[in-house]
Amino acid sequence: MIDGFYSIFFTGVSGQGFGVIVLKDGILVGADNTGGSYDGHYTVNNEKQFLIGEVVLNAPPGIQLVTGAATGSEPASWVMPLSLPPDFGNGRAFPMKTPTGPINIIFRKLRDI
Image 1 (cartoon, rainbow, N blue to C red):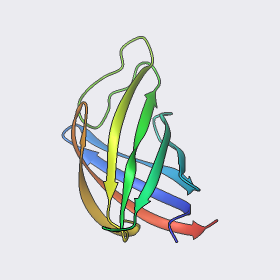
Image 2 (tube, one colour):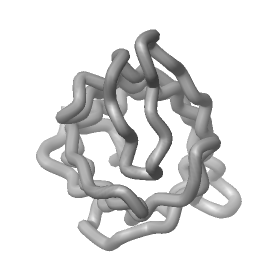
Image 3 (cartoon, rainbow, N blue to C red):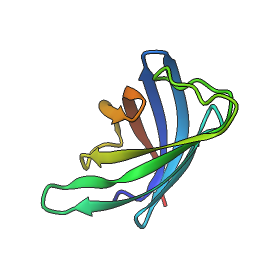
């Protein structure tokens, strides 16, 4: 079962961060330690057993992302594709491409919904 609460830990060239996301019935929501919020959607590709979708990072003004990008004096948003194997919540690091640069991200399932 994919639905649940997950902790996320991520690193990039400029640092590291953490947050929590919730996956429920094809909807993804979450927040991180900088005040960024995550909103997205997903489906499960039954043929390949991959979680496929996209997530929007809404970042507050005045922060630097782990990729080195900064938001400046205004909030900013980025859309990121999502493609994860069925066991993504096992604590293993995955590389992820974002519009501002690559990151490594760990998902750890905290509990089912």
